[in-house]
Length: 104
Image (tube, rainbow, N blue to C red):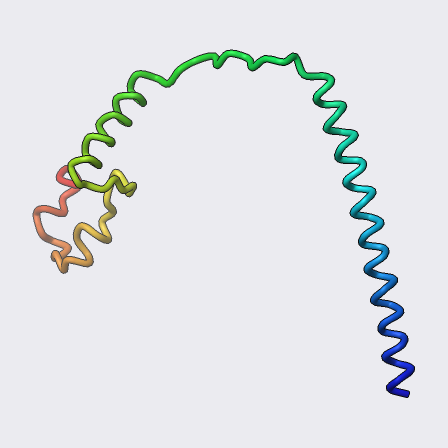
């Protein structure tokens, strides 16, 4: 019984490997045909790059690079902190003057 099972498994393994090899060859042939077709359709030169970065974006990148060279690191975070982090987690009482709406 074990011998028969081993023979069946070996047969299936060979069949699977041959199927994979056949499919791989088909894909390689198809890929090379597509590549040749694409190469035949190309113009033979690169198109020029059109456009440029906005001056503010250029300035921000330049300043970021300056600070990185000075040893700082650039991190992203919220531009406005929430009441949670500014007051509640610092145990500022609810009636504290700094928590007035016009001050936050």
